[in-house]
Image (tube, rainbow, N blue to C red; front, top):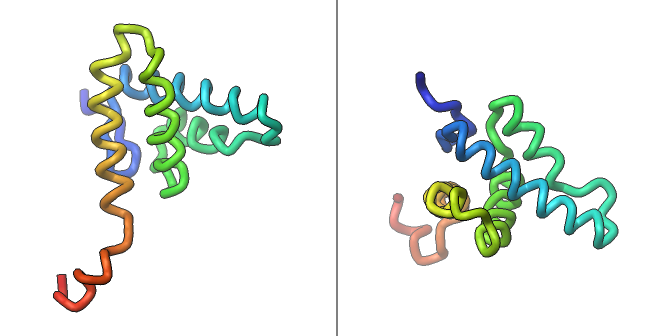
Length: 106
């Protein structure tokens, strides 16, 4: 069985659960800080429906994973770090080129 895809990311079932947990935690923190509704709700729904994340959703997932992995259960740490590397690469690949690259025709 092929892992579900989520934009440029392929998420195993385990990684989808980790992403979900990280976004839930980040959403709870945001709600406690007064965000109504927390921005993390949209990427959670998209992951649950196996849909591609919008660029802002990918960035929210990256930030959520960074915070989550500090206190994550041991079982989530290795797959969570691997997922964070891929999410970070996806965010960086969407970043605009640096000005010095603009004239190179890349």
